[in-house]
Length: 173
Image (cartoon, rainbow, N blue to C red; front, side, top):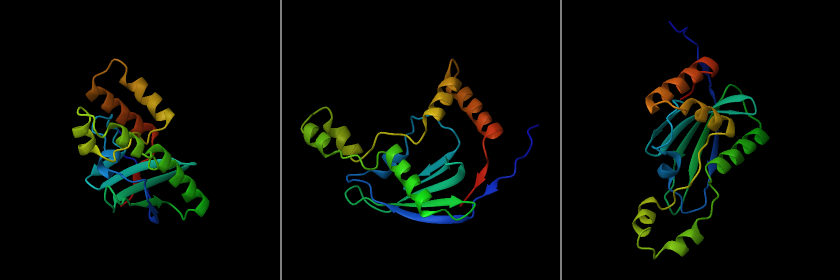
């Protein structure tokens, strides 16, 4: 039987407002159902909860959509064990912006393909979606190792076992 691990309680909250380059589609950017499900995040329309380790600090991130596709705004709640310095918070926000491509200017793409009959319905439906994923190179390597010659169900089981054994359980809300 697996031992019960006590969760680190992240009770300190820091709030940051991020304005991605418009157009920006929150749900299509933050939720990629085709990606490997790792159990370290939860998504519901307009909200993504994500665990994150930054500069050795275990964090809980809650991204909330507070804007529209044309007038984008994300409120980011950063949960931590202690108060975070301004420089730490700024560096984390820069990393989040990078990993989720929040400053990507898509206007040239839309201008170039706006009359393409094949892409037009897809562009209309997914307008503002950003490529990208919050995982680091290390996380992609672990996923690649775990996925080798295994079914998706088994890969998810193995990845969760790695998280449970080597990860840090976090509690934030």
